[in-house]
Structure formats: structure tokens, C-alpha cells
Amino acid sequence: MNKKFRRILLWTLAISLMFGLLWAALDLNGQSNKTAADAGSNAADMDMASLDSIKPKATSKINWKQEKALRSKIDQADSQYRKILETANAEISSAQKVSDATRDSGMTSAKSFQDASEEYAAFWDKNDGKSRAKLAREAGLSRVKSAEMALNNISKDKIEAYNTQQDSLRKAQTEYMNEAKTDLSSADKASLKANLAPKIQKIAGNLATLMQGVTGLISQVKEQVSAGGISGAVGGCAKTVTSGGSASDGVSALISPLTSLLSLVKGMTGNVQGMLSDLGTLG
Image (cartoon, rainbow, N blue to C red; front, side, top):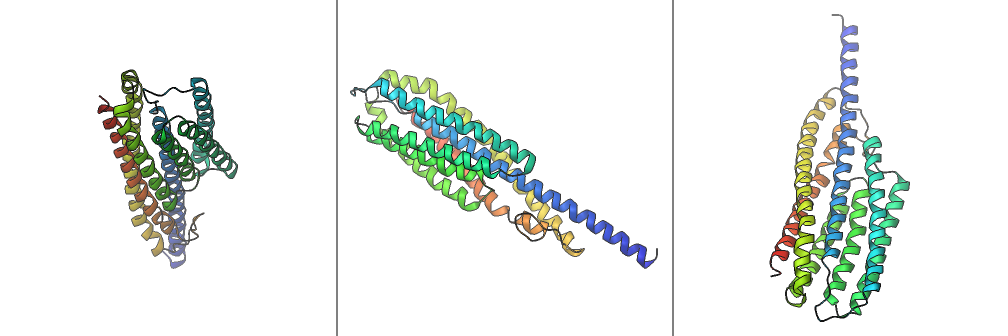
């Protein structure tokens, strides 16, 4: 084999490998964005479960027509947001990321959900329900933080920001449920156990699946980083869309946010189990 032919063959192999690694990097980035969006979908489920847990004190007399109207406003905002999440997921599947237009619509919808939750919180402030009002506010804040996580390229900072808000939501949930043990009617306690527990159990199952997916994705990323070392030996000139470095560099950058995402999902799982435990102690 003459030197010229050997050199051409080596460069052909190098270019093939380079583009193979680049494709893998883009694919892994898309998969990572998908897991963040899935976490956002589960977060939305947890927001609604938290709001669904709110019942009045047995001794309270409230305007049920007003309460129903306010809850309807929240439900409408939630429904609109879910549709945008579906669009975001479709875009990630085809283009590995969410479009600017969909992101803007999603954040606007998340803010509408927060505003509706704030109105609901104000209602409970006026109806002797301070812990209920706090829980509604935290659910509204949670929606915005989870939307920022779900609708952007996977980001450690955005994941951790939502994780912090999730902890605040859980604290508000615990505070409310501790009061609910003594101030809810027997009928409302029974209703929560019968209707809310199945929803929370479904979330727990979804989170278990998501945790497996994130764990598997982290393994894929680490394997690809190792494979990426080969490209460095033969040139390593592939550029990723996001990092401006080699394909290996771009994949390596996913490890940190994915590790944070795994920690987040574990925390969400613990909080869901805590909600189930709260329901079990209602009596």
C-alpha cells in the first residue's frame, strides 16, 4: 500500500469517525433535552397534585362558586401549558431542541399558571387558609422554574433552580398537610385518599421510568466521551453546535447537568413518597 493511498484511507476513516461522533453528540444532546422536558412534565403533575390536595377547614364557610371559578382558571392555564410541552417534545424529537417561539409561548403560559395560582392563594388568604395560600403560591412558582428547565437546552443551573423551588413546594405541602390532619372533615380526608393517592402513585411510576432513562443516558455519555478520545488522535476537528469544541468536549459537557438531573429526579421521587405518606396519616 503506497503512502498516498494509506494517507487517503486514514483521512477517510478519520472523517467518517469524526462525523459519527458529531452525530452521536447531537443525538445525546437531544436525548438530554428530552429528559429535562420529561422532568418538567412530571413537575407539572406534581404542581397539580399539590393544588388538588387543598381542601377547606371543616369549620370554614367559603364561596364555592368563586373557588370553582379560580380553580377552573388554573386548570385552563395548565391545559394550555401541557399542549405547549407536547409541541416542545415534538421539536426535540425532530431538531434536538425547543424552538424560540415555543419556548416563549411556554414561558408565557407558565406565567399565566402562576398568576392564576396567586389569585387562588389570595382567595385562601381571605378564607382562613394561610398554609393553603402558601401551597398555592409555591405551586405557581414551581411551574415557572420547571418551565425554564424543560423548555431550554439542558442546564445545570436551571435544574438546580427548580430543585430548590421543589424543596420549597414540599415544605409548603408538609405544613398544609400537618394542619389538614386536624382541620379537614372526614369526608374530605376520605376524598383525598381515594382520588389523589392514585394520581401520586402514577407520578411515582413515571419518575421511576425517568430515573432509569437518566441513569442510562449518563452511561451513554460517559461511553461516548471515552470514544471521543479516538477522534482527538486522528484530528478531532468536529465542532458541536453548542460548545464550539470537539464532539467529545460537547458530550462531556452533558455529564454535569445530567448528574444534577438525576439528583433532581431522586428528590422528586422522595417528595412524591412523602406526599403519599402524608395522605396515609390523615386518619
